Amino acid sequence: MKKTIYILVATLCLLTSCKNNDKKNENEDAEMRLPSEVDEEINMDIHSVESYANQKFRDYIELIHLKLAHPEFDKSISKELQKLSLEDESPLNYKEHFSVSQISLTPELNVVSDHTKNILLTFSVSTESKTFKDSIVAQITSDVIFIDGEKRMSRNIKFLQAK
Image 1 (cartoon, rainbow, N blue to C red):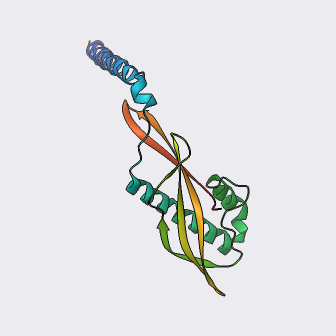
Image 2 (image 1 turned 90 degrees about the vertical axis):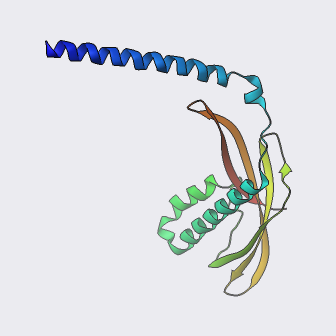
Image 3 (image 1 turned 90 degrees about the horizontal axis):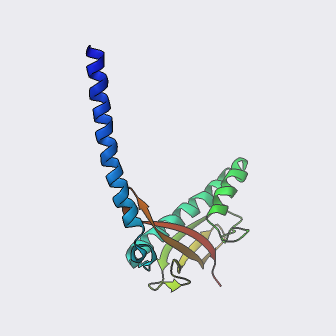
């Protein structure tokens, strides 16, 4: 008798929760289908783009340092570097240990398309033998995605040599 009551209560709870999820999914589908939401141009806040590009550039430099310090991991680190590069070879191809300082970003974004923007990063490079200025372009691709019915911004960054 107790088993039957537990089964009935569990079934009732399951049906109630499924019914609520169906209503929620219908609302999410309706939100996702609004063309104005999906097709709207992505406006990037320059400060968030700068901090994102700066952080990813620092991550990129750390990977290069790891590659130089641990040549036994060359293959796996090279794969990670390739994921962050638009070119076959790393845009920063320093053969010896180096440090980067004075990273600055251009205040304006170079618009490539509605979803792709380029930003120029300039920095000082110090090696054992010399110090010089260098630059790299960060290409940031942004897309609107929906997670649990909420509109979110997805960003991806790739680096390429500045010309």
